[in-house]
Length: 208
Image (cartoon, rainbow, N blue to C red; front, side):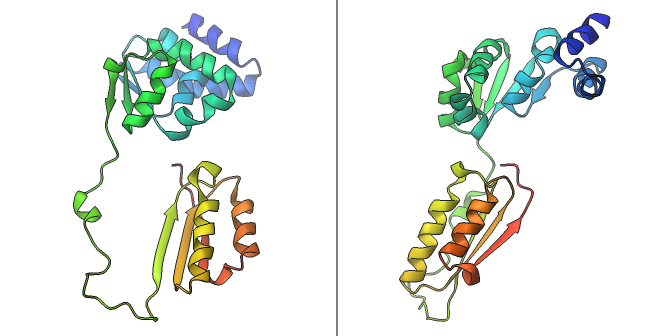
């Protein structure tokens, strides 16, 4: 409608940005939705048209950085979370800890459902070695990390641990699959510690 287009224009008054915003905002209004699920908390803030004008119920997922870190360093984001979160119909949290953290922004705990990422428990019960297995000097400990290049992921701490393995003479190979702005710090630390031969860094496309 003209009213919705006018509201979008108030958020983006340059024609290119306005058209881009229209492409993101209008599709849910053009479909006869029963429910709209928003995956990232910041998207609710970036596109308030959904919560203010969409008639169907809205479900918002509560995930890592968007809840645990971003609002702590951005006071405006904190304000907007407190403004919009109470208007959301329901929430999906990936952990009890995140559900508890999100309640600081005025969410009724009764509308939060904790649904952890699905992991087959049998995978967690697998032991790399049995008690009677003999570990020889030829065995190599293989370690892998997958996630964004972000300080909260703890790569620098993991690299400190790799250095301890090297000092203790443990043969290992550590693979990091990650992408993001912090990769230069990680690569520098690998080089500075002399771990080049024991670590493989792959510039991946993880969004977790």
